[in-house]
Length: 261
Figure (cartoon, rainbow, N blue to C red):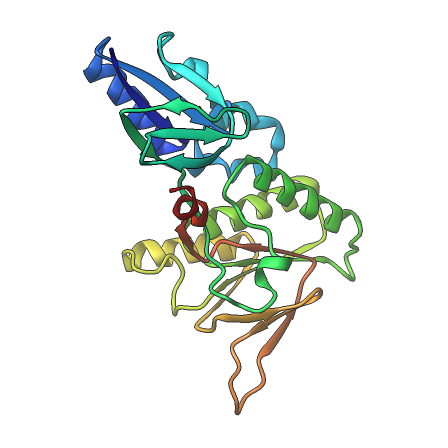
């Protein structure tokens, strides 16, 4: 009886594991690959779809172009893992047996318990997210005027936040859209923890593109129309009106991975 390895997830870890296992195991292991998506998403390029969703094919790789023909692919959502009996259960199957299992379900956005943030902000963890951001930015721009421009705010100035701000600025320029773009970072500089020359160069480039940068105060709350920044018992928070808010301020492990086992 052959050994069976089951890999769950088609992100970088899952896809890389499939390719490596195919390379080193040859025909000695049967590989089953399970994912909710029929593609591998090049996540560090997905921000490009914010400006132009039509380039979707540039940032996704169909699983059939990744895996070898002998690798079984199941397009489904894993709902439970029975570790005692070594069984994976999905929405449509309850008996996917394994000898070895890799859960590579990735990360999710961290909202840190900030009041109203999760309910009012877009995130950028997938292709659908980028398309929704595009749609919301486009709608806000179409409703705006030069006297009352659309107000787009990005929370978190790590790499994803910087890329998002840049893509929205390019969209604004391409469409000649009346739009104000603000990038908010709680720490004292954008791209925190990286080389100071690089930080300075990125900030200068963003400012040249007309992106307003606020640093040194964390977002403390969000409601339907206003972002609250900073504040304390003795000081009221700064209020920043917005039409579209994108949160790129942190990631954490997938909560569902803890509930599967």
